[in-house]
Every structure is written in structure tokens, then in C-alpha cells.
Amino acid sequence: MGYTKRIPVAEPVLIGNEKRYVNDCIDTAWISGSGKYVNAFEEEFAAFCNVKHAIGVFNGTVALHVALLVLGIQAGDEVIVPDLTYIASPNSVVYCGATPVFADVDPKTWTLDPQDVARKITTHTKAIMPVHLYGHPADMQPLHDLAQAHGLVIIEDAAEAHGAEYRGQRVGGIGEIATFSFFGNKIITTGEGGMVTTNSDDLAQQVRLYKGQGMDPQRRYWFPVVGYNYRMTNIQAAIGLAQLEKIDWFIERRLEVAAWYNEYLSDMEGLLLPVQAAWARNVYWLYSIVLPDAIDRDTLIRQLDERGIETRPFFYPMHVLPPYEDRDGDEKFPITTTLSKQGINLPSSAKLTREDVEHVCQVMKASIDEQIHAKIPV
Image 1 (spheres, rainbow, N blue to C red):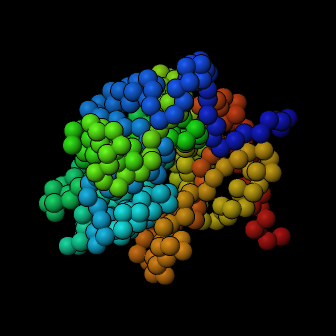
Image 2: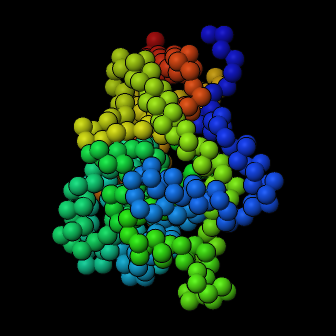
Image 3: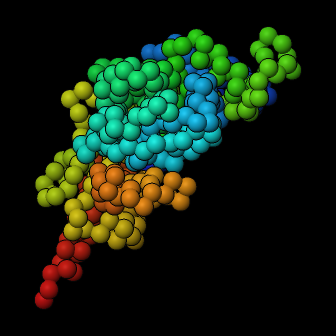
């Protein structure tokens, strides 16, 4: 096809004030866990999420850990987590000494299924952790109803969903507390980095305490609790602030990329495209599709890679990973099992052009045709 450049699955776009802000950190020697950019990034991100508090931390995983910690999650407790998620979600529960209990996902939105959550609640359940997967928000109202009925708390894992909306409300302020990731492939990035958001003054105060080694903010070098060194650096925040200044553009670009994919792939029989529920705004962190059973997903990934197109499989179900292995998991989590086996994430960077997306779709269609014809007996 005469297409020579390689197309990565995701890459950061650094076209704003990133360099100027980072140089300012270097010039002023404010490069560590405090400085004007930390404060500014936290304030602006809180405003973006329409919450009272946003507290920067070193990455999205520690954001989950400290959020669970200040919610009081501890040994003997259970937290319900989707079986289809990134490993950080259940791991953060284990960090607190608690037990992650997995629930299946909805077949359309691929997020936590409230009906299966209801079946998993026990006397040990203390929290529900909906994950806004691949940019689409979870159905929060039925989860909120369950939480209220059983005296549970909700922690939103919004690592992949900056700017996504549930019934007109941006994620990050729907549960008691929420977390975000700013890894290099996210909608906005700080390289590594994370954020905890909440409307609770008390929870925000505790997050700031625990993420700063547990030092009393009113009494230097006095540590009333065992804390953690989870602070975001001023350099991370400088990059994050510059990225946040352009977040509306980043989201609009992803919506445009998703629309191009929808246009080019809508005629492919058996292909499941990402949805946007009537109550949701999907920000399409990744453009994620599910292949028909007749197509070998891993072979397709290899074929695309050989042609210069990087993709990613869906996450493994948590129940097949060694730390959380459940031999009956395929029966318990049928939706997650199917999605994981046949799901693929296509290139989704804000850098993509229509020509790039068209090329990806053309190559993918050709590769699928190769598989189908290879199976037809001569």
C-alpha cells in the first residue's frame, strides 16, 4: 500500500507548554515533591473533575492504594473488583491486606455488572471498585444503590477515563473517592503519575498525610502514622499541567479517531465495536474491538505487527493470573472470558490522521481475509 511509517498503539503528544514548564522547574531547582506546579496541577484537575480535592501522587497504582487505605480497607475486608481490568486494581486491595472479589462485566459496556456485584456481596464486603474501562464509564447508579443498601463505599478506578461522563457528571466525583493514572499512554500524561480525587475534606486530608510519609503538616518531622513516599514531583506536575491545558483537544481528537474507525469498520460482519451507552460519554482512551470467534486474535496481532501496526490484546481476566487463579473462573465470568480472548486495542493516539486510521483498517481487513481464506478447504 506504499505506507512506510510504523503506527504505535498509543504515544504521548507533547505540543503545549511541557518543555517551558519543565525548564522552569530546572531553572528554579524545584524538581522534587513540592512546588508551584504540583499545587496548580492539583487545583486545575479538581476543577476539571468538578470535585473539591485532587491530590497528586507518583502513579496510578499508588493512587488506588492510598485511596483504599484512607477508606479504612484492611485485613478481613473484601472489595468487589471487575474480573476484566488491569492488575493494579486487585493488587491495590491486597496491599491493604484485604481480599479482591471478582465480578463479571456487562457485555455491552465491558464494565462492572451490577447484577453480578449483588451476588458477590457478603458480610465481609466493604467497598465496590468500578473500573471505567478503556474510556467508557461504569453504570454507577445501580452500584450506588447497592452500596447504600449494604453500607459500602465506592472507589472509582478512572485510570483510563479522563473526562468520561456518567449522566452528565464527569468521573472522579461520583464515588466517595476516585483515582486516575497519567502513564505515558493515557489521555494526558506526566510520564508516570496519578491523582486521587474526592469531595470529602477528611479523606483528602488523610490522603495528603499518608502520601507524604505520614508527616504531620503542622509539626515537621512528626509522624503520627506509618505513611508512604507517594508524592508527585514538581516536574511530573509541570508536564501534567501543560497536558491538562489541552485536555479538551486531546479528548476531541480521540472522539474523531473513534468516529473514523466506526466509519471504516461498521461494515465488517461479526465485529463488535465499542459502544457509548445512552447515559455515558465514552472518551475512547483506546479504540477497542472484539473479533468474531472465527478469527484468531493473537495471529491477527502478529500479522498487524509485521505490517508496522502495533496493537494490544484486552487484559487477561484476573481469574487466570497466578495470584488470583480460579480454575472455575471461565464459568463464573463468561463475559470477561470471551472479551479477553477476542478483544484487541487498535492504535488510538491523538496524533493519528484519517489516513493512518484508514490504513490500519485496510491492513486489518486484509489480514482477517487471509485467515478466513486459509481455513477454506481447497
